[in-house]
Length: 386
Image (cartoon, rainbow, N blue to C red; front, top):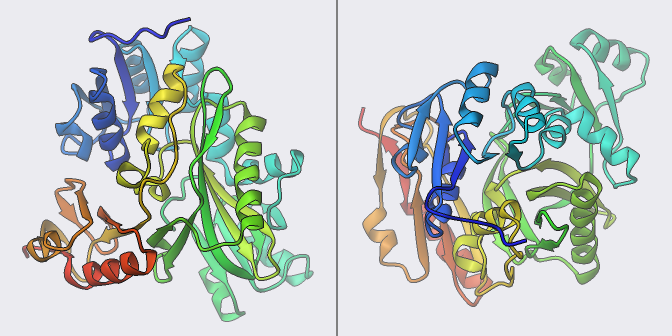
């Protein structure tokens, strides 16, 4: 059946951060009207969308009423009111990715149980309900240092995660329902973006390699294609396809993985939406992750994910010791470098390590792209006026 897209079609996007902005930009190419729900009137997507609605996406009534105004719903964040989405779906509203899948993914513990049930490789884990239970488990040696504590819900961008490497670090333990993971001997961190459309067609993007800022556990640099051997690449791609097929999910799924020093490929976490590890696809792949997400949820054939040109992506993070009205230093100098594509998200205020934009560096030589990325990182700074 032909999927109808007209100038009257209204796509609802819950949350208007940078992902919502870039998704709205992609949708505008097809004359799709985008409705954004976000609590902040000056969110990045507010100046791009067709219609902005101010509201709390954790509130049942707000999400439900927003859903009644649009023809289809998607989202750029996991932490939203699921009950309202389930009610809307029961009433016939098209919601992608599906609410029942989002409910599983929202909970890092449920994610792990899903991997276990479907025999998807991941690190060993335990689910504990409180800091006291973790301390008792340490006492009776059912868990051992080193380990990673992740709060089961609400964590994002490195928040809600503590790495416990010593007895002294036990003081950093967080209170709350927790996922306790055995420490993995990591060689590399990689990611695969995979898409599945309403007809069950599946396509993956080329595997990328991620380098993290150790202070805040945020991706600092992303390299495409990843510097991994063919066997690891095949395993990573196969795992991503297995996960999205096991869920029967519609849309884009970002799959973050560890490669251990023994050569094992293990799932770390997943995100059912466009993702930081796919920003580079806007320029470096034939189809961007944003267009692919739209193709998937609208029932179109999935686009070609081939690399047009290798790339390195760097996140623009707010500089330490700067908070307030944002200013960017070094733009003019960076614009003079060949192959540099700068994306500024439009957030009005900067904070230390806040994601304020990204830069994609394109070059036929990955080594050359890395050198250019290093130069950009040293020049382009996000600061404040005060």
